[in-house]
Amino acid sequence: MTEELLPAELPLLLVWVIKAVIIFGALISAAGITTLAERKVSAWIQYRHGPNRVGPFGLLQPLADGVKFIFKEELVPDGANRLMFRLAPIITAAPAMMAIAVIPFAGEVVIGEYNLGNLSITDLSVSVLYVGALTGLGIYGIILGGWSSNSKFSLMGALRASAQMVSYELTLLLAILSVVLLAGSLDLRAIAESQAISGESTIGVWNMFLQPVAFVLFIISMFAETNRHPFDFAECEPELVGGFHTEYSSMKFALFFLGEYCAIIVMCCLVTTFFLGGYDVPFWEGAPWFVQLASFVAKAACFVFLFIWVRWTLPRFRYDQLMGLGWKVMLPLALVNVTVTGAVVSFGWSPLLTPVLALAALLPAAVLFAKIKPGEASLTGQSIARQAVSEEGAVS
Amino acid sequence: MVIVKRKELSFWERLYLPEVLRGLSVTMQAMFRKPVTRQYPEEPLPVNEVTRGQPRLAVNPDDTIRCVSCGLCEAACPAYAITIDGQETDRFIEREPERFDIDMLRCILCGFCEEACPKDAILMSDELELADFSREALVYDIEKLKRPVSALQPRLDYIYKLSDRWNSSSSSS
Image 1 (cartoon, each protein chain N blue to C red):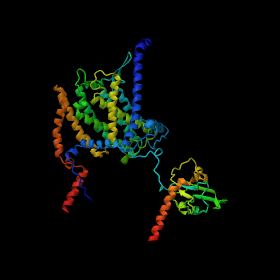
Image 2: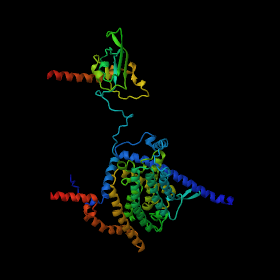
Image 3: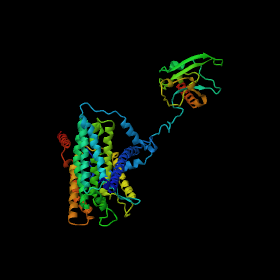
Image 4: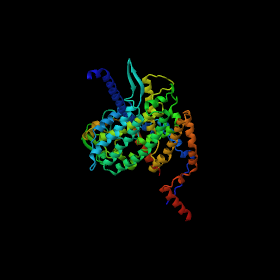
C-alpha cells in the first residue's frame, strides 16, 4: 500500500510541506522587516536616522531585537492565571499566522519542467470564511492576556479591544461581502482572478475602482482590526500603560508583537487580493509566476507602508468617537454599499455601474450630514453639560 | 469655569478623510527632510576656544612643563580633584611637579584651576570625551595631562582677551 502511495503521493506532500515552510518563513521574516520599517519610517517622519548601527542600514536590527527578547527575564505577575497567561500570546499569534495559508501569492509555479501547482499553501473554496473566522479569533488572545494578568490596566485594554474588534469586524466583513457578491465566489483565488485586467470572462477592473466605498471602509476597519493607530485602544500607552501587554515580558511580549505584525501583513495581503487584483500584473496576460509574486508583494508592501505612515500621522481617537464612527457611520455605509452591489448583481447590470450607484445612494446621507450641526447629532454627556453651562451663563 | 468656544468645522473638515489625506501629505513631506540627528562618534561635537573641556597641562616647545607646583589650582579646586607633589629642578623656575594627578571622575570642568594658575600652565582644553573601563584609569597622571602649548594656544588667547576686556571695562567705570 505504502509502496504504491510513495511515487504519486509523496512528491505532492513534499511540495505542500516545502511551500508551507517557505511561506511561513517568509511571513516571519516579513514581520521582522516590518518592525524595522516601522522604526525607520517613524524616524524619517521625525527628522531622525532610525536604527543604523546593526548591519548595513540597520538591517540586522530585528535579529538583535529577537536575541534581546530571548535573553530577557520572564515575569509572571502574582495572582495571574498562569495557564491563560502563558497561552494568550500563542492564541494571539497563531490565528494571524494561520490566515496566511489561503492567500494566493501567484498563479501556477513552473520551475523547469516541474509544475508545482498554485503558489499558496492551500486553495480553499471557502477561504474568505476561513480568513474571517481567523481574524475574529485573534481577539481571544488579547482578552485572555488582559484578563489573566490580574492587572486593572490590562483588563481595561482587553475590554476596549474586544468592543472595538466586534464593532469593526462587522464593517470589515460587510466590505468583503460586496466584493464577494461581485466575484460570485468565496475563494480568494477566484476573487483575485475575477479582477484580472486582461483575460476572458472577467470584469477587467480592479475592485478598488468598482467598490471605492468598500475599499475605504475595508482600509479603515483593517486598522481597527489589527489594533493599529489611530484605533490602538487596546494598548494606548498614555492611558493604559501598554494595555493588555503591560504585564508581559521577554518572548511572550515578543510573540504578541509578532502576532500583531503578522496580522498587519495578512491584512495587507487581503486588501491586495480583494481590491487590487491580487497577483494580477496590469497589461501583461500570462506573466510568469515570479513576476506575479513580485507584483503581489509590491502591492502588499505599499499597504504595509500605509499602515506605518498612518500610525505616525494620526492621533488616537477618543473612545466614544471610535464607537460612534464604527456604528453610526461605517456600518450604515457598508450596508448601503452591500445593498447597491446586491441590486447590481441580481438585476444583472454592468458591474461598472456599482461605484456610480453607490455614490448616488450616499448623496442623501452626505446632504443630511452637512445639515446636522455636530452638537445636535448626538447629545453626549459632555455636550449636555456644555449646553447647561452656556444657558446658565446666558441667564446670569 | 471657562467656556471654550470650539471652532466650527466645515463640511469638508467633518468628512474627516480629506483632512486625513492632508495630514498624510505633511508627514510624507517630512520624510524627505534631512535628519537633524548628529551621528555622534562619526560626527564629533563642534568645539572652539570657548569650549571648556577637560583641564590639561601646557608643555613649552623645549619640552619643559610650565607648572611650578605652587598649589593654587589644588586650593581653588572645589571638587578636590587635583593632587600635586612638588620637587626642585635646575631650571630657572626652580620648582616643578613630581606628581600632578587630576581625578577626572571628580573634576566638574568648572575652570577655577585655569583662573587660579599664575603661570598659564593649566588650561581647559577642547577635549570632551571621557570613558574607560575602571575608575583607576580615569585618574589622569602628569603624562596623560601634558599637551604642547601650541595645541592650547587658541584657548590661551581667548582667556587673555577676556581678562583684557574685564580689566579695561572695570578701570573705565
